Length: 237
Length: 130
Image (cartoon, rainbow over all chains, first blue to last red; front, side):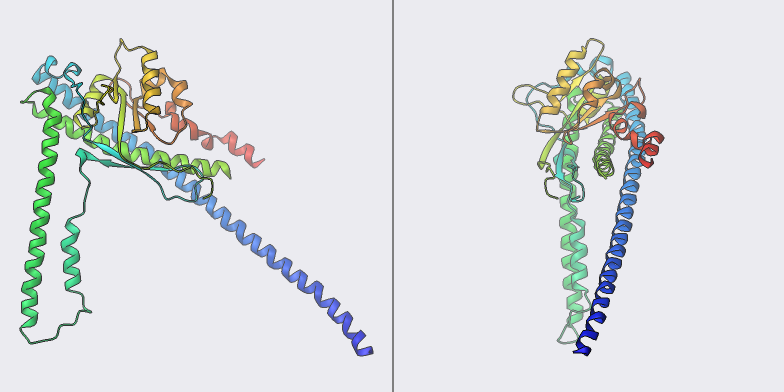
């Protein structure tokens, strides 16, 4: 009995020690969480600063592209005549834009604000990475884990087989590329045709300059949405 | 994230333009011009005869259309309807202020940079620390 009562004070003394240990654990866990939150804040601020910097640099590039375009247009107007390069010639018949955008929702789940992502589709062509197909086939065929059984002539015939298959793929990709280029040329000529059948080469370079400007504009739009998304996260914290 | 509004996906959205004749001409050469069945275009040419009301109406129309994803507006034109541009806060269509031939780009007037500039202000940082 005396032993039982003697044990009780020992048990009562160990309970506060356990509680203290738990408190220490919670405090250190809270400290680690605070440290992670601070790191997240810093990441977000850095992302925001990067977006702003990128936005200003791209705007500078856009200004250059537009300046080149205006200069080429002025040269075209000078060589073709003011009446031939004028907005009065714009076609007001129903027509669909040849260059459009795809809008997707960015997968940034951390942001509570909507973050759209824009993708440019120039001349209604979707960019396909056809050139990768031939490369993938070559990689598959030359994988070291493929085991070839048979006579000594097998590796040679395999080489001929893979070589011809790769050549066919490359030829097909070349044809597709040429077809795409033809479609782009057709679409570009159609856009130029509002100013007549024969146009100054400067008008063609104007077209290229403004196409470049469009690409920069889409990048700017994406940076803008990243910037606003980061800003709203930082503001919300 | 729960409660995060989503962006409707669109695979063939347009770019609208409110700018001077040369800028609109250039972008039309790049293939962005669209005329719908009601003869409505996705561009407005601003010249010295264009009124502020016409610019406001075009801006409101382009930002309300669901088939337009980006609205390009020359910064000097945006300055004419600055209140309207600054009060716009939807993610799509995105409003981008671009330079014009006679008016270079000024970051101080850009509506997006104006919205976020308070982060760069020393007063706001100091007040947060107090």
